[in-house]
Length: 479
Image (cartoon, rainbow, N blue to C red):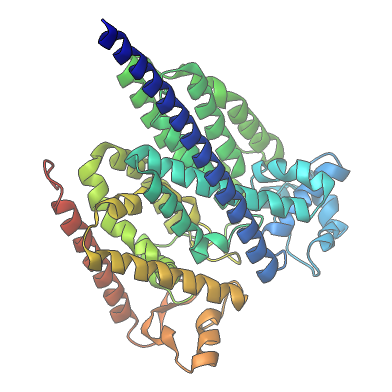
């Protein structure tokens, strides 16, 4: 009897100690995560302040929308462009970013073809300080993207260490931190995509997640109409997930998104006289074959994703591991992302115009970062780890060099300013081995097609590498 009660007391003590240790561990992890987020924020702020690209591209037009809201209490920008109010943000004359539908009808106002969602999000900060607070808010959005990337990777892999490491690798990418702190909608879209994907893996059969899901979908469309290509797959997949779990459709998604949808289409009709969002854009934005734009987006010496962020080539490897471990989540992610990505690659200005390098691609890259997490978990051999470390170091070095040199945005230059700067220091033109594309996405220079083929061969090697890693996992088959 004494032994029985002694055993009960010991079990109780052990349970209490375990709970305390667990709570302390969670507290320590929370403090560590908070410290990392603050450190990332400060680091991105230092990069932003050092490079300090002047407001350009679309940025003055977004701020002009906020200025009109503040001063005129409307979004009719006709008087603001005529009065040159944008000189507050840009020191020269610029073309008005107004829908051609407004210019065709002299009686209408002048409304920007940019989504109103981003200016509305920045407006509270804009009221306090027109320049500094919007910049800080956009750095905050970048930090949120990194946080959600880590959460999304952890939600799928359940590996905290490698999920955090994956987010750190994304932060090291030039395409990412070159965009942080600048007033473009792409990181906002990336954050919303990640939040929606995370909600899909939670209990979407309940009302509050459904409401939030619908609100995020609606918010995303107000940020940029092109995200309608994402909304439809998200609605279809969300309906399927909810019905499979609870045998009911997620009706509260409609309730959450309806106010945004009503606002969006009423604004289209009231401001532009149309219900087709594609009609509000200038006609010079043409169409291009993805067979040209996709290789250019990967290998171009000025805008190539894998040229400036070689660590991201591991996505092609990790997809095989992701497929073998969790086919469903990979299929759902690609089903949602792929249509919008293809639509983006069909635009003649797939690179995003005069803007931070790779800004359109940053909409989608965080969503597929779990591929790298899965690969990191399952590589075991020392030379495989050395390969990953080497790619990470090259990526970090490229980012540091580009930041130090304050590499300007690519526009019509024949050569990359980044590689020209390196050549000035070491005397070697490394970009000679890379394909060069002009603004019409045409290959220029000698052996262009062969350079593209080398790049595709390199991707094929990393695809095979992922196949080999995935083949080691027992109990599952590879397609």
